[in-house]
Structure formats: structure tokens, C-alpha cells
Length: 546
Image (cartoon, rainbow, N blue to C red; front, side, top):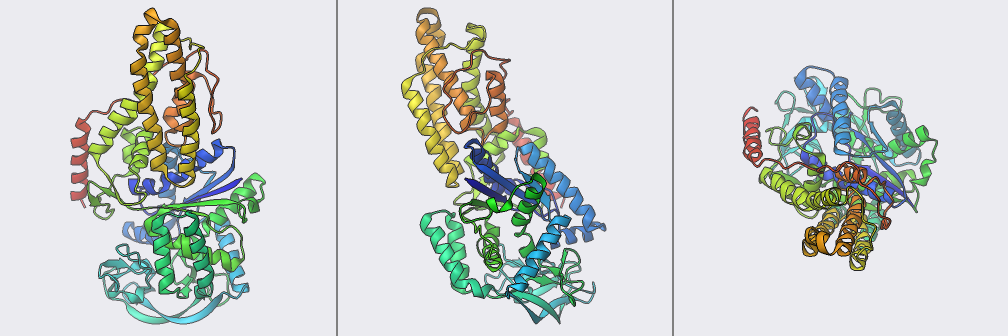
């Protein structure tokens, strides 16, 4: 089976925060899992370097768009690498291959008759002497009255046109813009209304999409799909490859989602592969993103694929709700965020991956609390998982001179492990990462009780065969945990395999016991609970500096 996994493309206008990681982490879990199953995985994403947010940041810092994009793309690559993300290709939207591929997509849609010219009114700032990109226009949402940008209201998820906003202002200078006439290409989204309705209903019936994606997409379709502009008067981006449209750019919200396909093309070119193997009706595709990106993946991108006549519509939508911070909404403008480069300096990446999975905002908003994060690490990751591994292997190292007893493994536990692979795999394939890791940790707690009840520290002196069976069973559990938890906690699982002298076997029971242990060391260190107050104080102080 061929599996395409697309992670949303973060804007290269500022550092990643934990909200980004919470939304994107399921993609790496899926990629690692399907590779263990032996499937052919193509996991792609990249930095969005063409969007208005980068232009805004460049204006604020009096530098170039390229300098901003380079800085954050480099930082993103380092952060994803340190977090253990296993992209097959992490690229960028200002790469030449992406520009050329998007221009070809535009020309193909034009050739197929789904693009048309239209003269429209657009916000123009007389102070800055430019037409304003949608995100450069701010005002009041006409739907919910909240403060909103010109492209979308984050409060009610309505897709907007800048002219829809009340009390419009220019984000650059704060003045009210004029409304002037200009000409743009529009995409005939309305043509695909019925086709999209059928597509969404099928996905809903089969349960392949998160419920938030189904409901929000049905809301858009019920309201009716308007034809929307796909070019803009933008300072940076992909030029429209049509005479008479010099200086205009292809709108970011159609060229950015096209990145999944353009990145696939580039990866296939670099590796001598046929991209159609991941873009056909038989291939499985997962799209991983936050709630605010739902319509771009469930309406806009499918409609573009339909217009191209390209097979490979999204089969699975994994769209997380929002992550809050200490019961407050994350706010980059108020510096109310936990920045990924900072948390990686002081904490194990497995701790971050574990907390954001076990507390994932899969069906409702979830909160990141420093207190919960640190206690979760100490009591669950360290106290349950790492403790079971350490107490077993340390006991063997001390009492058996690092030799693993080659005894019979408890049959009941073998059956539990076999069933666990099936259960966890089913949850992962359904996008239920939280339930998957909960099932594994329930088994870990059961395994700790087994160790306690069998009392190897006693039986080693008077029932050596029973002791050897207990320890063999525990090592069997550990080597299987190193596979079951590999998609979630890759760094700790790698340490286990090094101590056991084993390698990844695949998504299946590992029955053969290792014979001898290598250097036995703790998987994780305990975090001093004093860090809770320190981190809360740092967070408060940082937010006050804005």
C-alpha cells in the first residue's frame, strides 16, 4: 500500500510554538507506524515562504522577505529534526521547483476552463502606495463581530474577503484603505459544489475524517461555494504566468496547499520514483493540520484536484482542535506561547511528544500546563514506562551478569501483546493517537503490577526458574514496547534497542529474546518540580515585555 502523509506548512515568519507541534505530530506518528508495517510512505511538508505574514515581518524588521524566510526555514528544519520528525522531504514554497509546478497547475486549470477574469474592487493603501494583501487588511468580522483578518476569522472560522470586514484598517500603517478597481483571475469553485458534497458525505459515512472537519466542511457547503479570486496584487510570491498580469501573484491559499503535490513531484524526481504511485485512487492519503486550516484541505484543495482531473483526493483528514496555554488562548502577538526552540533546550523531545499525544486536542481544545507537563513526565513517562524498563534491566545486569534468561514467556502476556499491536494499529490508522498511546500505557501499568506480584527479588534466591520466567517475560514486554512506542517515543525506544542489542522488527510481535544486555542506563531523568514555578515566571515575564 502507498501512503501519502502531508503535514501543514507553517508560515516562515516566526518561531514554532507548541500549538504547531500539537497539530503536526500525528503526521510523524503515522509515518513511523506505516513504515514499520512495511508500507511505502511518502511524508512531505515545508515552510510557507510566500505568504503575507512573511512580508509583514520583513516590513517590521526593515529587512527582506528572503532573509526572514531563510531564518525561520532553517530554524524549522532544526526543530523538526530535534523532535524526531521523519519527513521524506521538507521543502519551501519559494523553491524554484514549487514555483514552476504551481504555474503549471495554474495553466492547466486555465486550459480546463475553470479560471476566468473578473474586475473587482480591492483595498488600496494610499499611505503605503499598494494594493493590500488580504492579511494586510484588518477589521471586524461581519459574521461574529470579532476582530479578524481579511482572509479568515479565527473566531468563527468564516472564510472572508477583505471587503467583507467592517471598520477596515491597513495592518502596515493603521489607516483606513481606499477601495480601488483591479482585475484578477477567479476559480470556479461553484462548479464543484455537488461533487464536493458527494465527496464529503462519503468520507463522513466511512468515518475517515475527524468530526470537526466533517461538520465545518458541511457548513461551508450548505452556505454555498462562491467563486474566489486566485490571484492577488502581492509584493512576493509566484508570478501569474499570463500576459497582462505582470506583477500579480498566484494567491497563497491555493499555491500553499498545492505544495503537497509539488513536494511529491520533487521527491519523486530526486529519488527516481513515479509520483503517480502516491497520487491515484488506490493510494491512502492523510492530511495533518490544525482546525483553522480545515477548509483549505477539505474544500479548496479537493476542488483544485478535481479541476486538474488529478486522482488522489484526500482520504483521511486529521484536524486537531486548538491548544491553549495555562487556560489561555495562545497568542504570538502577546508572547503567550511556549516556543519550540526554547523548550527543546531544557526538555527531552520524548517528553514533549508524549504530553502532546496523551493530551492531544483531537476532539476538543486541550491545555498545556507546565505543572501537568512536568508531573506527566515524572509520573507516567519516567515513573511508569522508564521505571519498568530500568528495574527489569538493572535487575538482570546485577543478578544475571547482563545475561538475559532464555526462559518461557508467560502465555497470557504474549496474547495481550499480540492483541495490543492490533488495537494500537487500528487507533493510529483512524487518527486516534491519544487512544493508541493510552492503550500502551495501560499495558505498561499492568506490566509493572506483574513485576511486583512475581517478586523476582525474592524468587531469585529460592525459585530460580520462576524468576527467570518473570524476567524473560519482562524483557519480551520491553522489546515489544520498543516497537509499539516507536511512533510516539522514538528516542527512548532507540535507547532500549541499544541496551537490548536489537533492531526494529516491524509492526508485529517480537518473540526472540536477546541474549545479553549492553550498557544499561536510565531512559529519562526526573524533572525537578521547582521548574514549574520557574517556567510560569518566565512565561509571565516574557508576555509583559511585549
